[in-house]
Image (cartoon, rainbow, N blue to C red):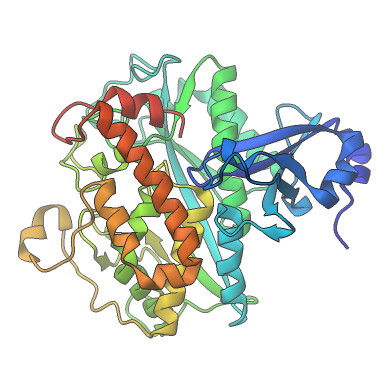
Length: 441
Ligand SMILES: [Mg+2]
């Protein structure tokens, strides 16, 4: 029996609900619905014109309905009158295949057929910048190696505390907050969960960080590379696959603590990495972060080749502990649902085809890459990764050809718009277009 949102509204004194969805470009969109209308909306959904969002629809299409998932309900910690709900998109009585939460649920369903679930945690890095977006917010945050800088962290105590207190209140299990490797950059970590829960929380986290930062007179950005000389915003994910209470990625007899299933899953990600970049590094600006030269702090902390290793942060995949791996490819502009869906689809490909990822490499990839000339490189720009996705039959099988084509069409039209005004050149300054189109990603 689904939770009755109308009853919950009365119990929790919720006056309004935000019925929200994330479109293909990761934009969080909502309708604000008074509590007295939620009963009907829970059944039939809130109506939207699909063409008005980044979904491959036309103005002539029928109404699209966002049907809220009552399990995703979050009472806004900073405004208890409002309840936030993630929802699935429906049109003409069917789920919208090319919508991110539906895409993720399709992959989850495939894994469920094997009686397995994927658990994941995400590490969302962000910068605190001035409201006009021109510079970092703290003029005293100038160390050349600013990572874990206590003073810079504590100058933002009121803001960080408010976000962390909110996570405690919501029951996310936050466990650490730090100043990251770029001036003005922060990261906050909370517990891993089932991948759908993590995707919903990831979408909400970005909304929360931006909102609370605004309240404190600042602006938060998850843009992959907002400043040329500083480390970019990554969004690393830690992955494991479980059968009920048993971590099926764990094998203590293996040197790195991973099972055959984990290596096959990882092999699927290695095999599909170039195409996955189209989801994981989805903006033009993303390609200033990967394949990037060292930054002011000495390292970009982002991958350039497609490789995996043990506990070593210079590779695309790191195995920090037995029973899980960390994928370091994604950046702050990644769509929270396509992050999980992409990993899952590639992992399933690896399981289905028993893909062997080869041997882990034990080297400093930032300095030793010349010794591995045959390793495949990550794409250099968005055009290249879209081209890889276009030619990837496995991903088309996983998501449906029409869904992939919709994604490609929208991203390609964005590139066209960019090219009319600018040229992408990583050795030159970040363009005005990148700033105005990516700062709020
Ligand atoms: Mg980090």
